[in-house]
Image (cartoon, rainbow, N blue to C red; front, side, top):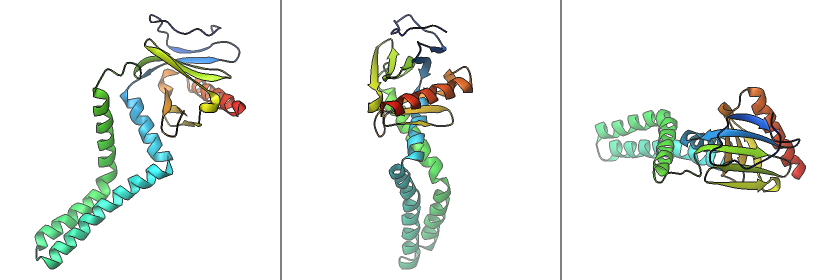
Amino acid sequence: MKFGISAPNKAEVQLGMRNSGSDAMEVNVKIDVNDVIAADEHLIRNLPALRRRVQFCRFSIPFALAMFGIVMSKTRGLRLEGNFLIGFAVILLFFAPALMRWGRHRQIRSMFRYGSNRALFGEQKIIINKTEIARYNQYGHSAYYWPAVERIEVGSKHAFIFVSAVQAIVIPKRDFSSEHEFDLFVENARMYHREAG
């Protein structure tokens, strides 16, 4: 383990986690669009307002199609077309979650195709200590004092350090050499956040 905190320079690329002093830890991560998608999925599963909106869309669109199909077959005499809409609504009810997820992922990927997004994607160094969480890459850095952090959540493959209701610093579990290192990093982040009040 190496000691001391220093901002990385352009040429520095080290993978793995190291302790950067008695109260600091750092990890080098590589962020890509799939990590942004994972954060989106985590938000939808864990924010009640987003979860309700997704559920509403899942049921309201098939319900509206089924009602329209019933109206078509009863009042217009378009039995075949009405039954088709009712059948389509039932199928959509079952496939809506996958279709909605595919649509969100496609939208996120298309948004990030514009520009290089160098400041967001690629190799980054995440450093946590008693006062802040800092993120460095070859194009710049950002830091947040722990009181600015709203919450710290863990998914199956990532940790999310939320600096607003919907914006998080994403830390992939894959960039740690072991599950224990990942757990230790998250545990220390939570401790620093708790102590900062």
